[in-house]
Length: 251
Ligand code: GLP
Image 1 (cartoon, protein in one colour):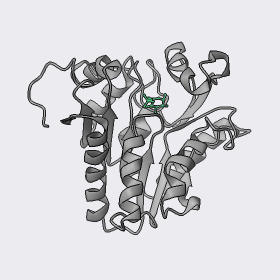
Image 2 (cartoon, rainbow, N blue to C red):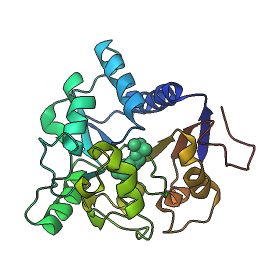
Image 3 (spheres, rainbow, N blue to C red):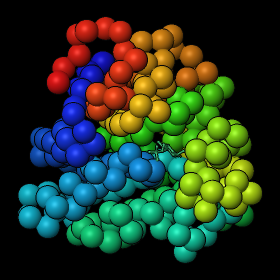
Image 4 (cartoon, helix red, strand yellow):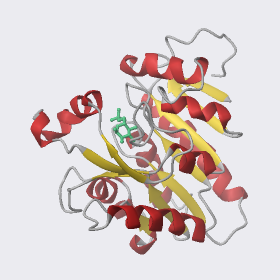
């Protein structure tokens, strides 16, 4: 596993954009498939993407995206839905074709059928080339909460109290407003991506990062599943790296 320790979240965004841009350029396929995340963590990366796209350095016209997750019960027009977040913070500001962007449908009538279809859609475009991840303070990736099977695919998950409390800040700090369920790609879906990058900043992520990188592979810390991935990179700030014990990491 490659671990890059950076000084702040702006550098985290730049270094991650460099990794993805290099892979996009190296690729000779007609489409490039990005797996995307929401939350505060990927915002510096999305700002980089937008800037490089506007500068003509990074073309999104042939990019296809699949988001990790979505709250169940929030329509795309809800400002806290992940579809809304992606449109506002990335898609609307690049030359990506909106038809090529996919976010799980939190309003699907038949959630199970939708989840199966989502997996098929990913397979139909040849799988995810680069998966972008943040990490929850309890070690979750996407909405794969502790206890999630390490081989799981896209499905509905009940959110833990910790995650709902962490995310209450987006819902006027009103826990009752935070949805109880989400559709999420599984740990297995994430493992199937050709490359994965996990970003983290802030001291509140330090324990989850240390558990994921240096602890055992366990469903109790879903991000630890990346230890089984061939091309997983962590790009983390110094404060998020503060509980790591090995001294062999890059900067
Ligand atoms: C949510 C998302 C995750 C994200 C996590 C951390 O629960 N489902 O994909 O990584 O929050 O969020 P933040 O980046 O805001 O700390």
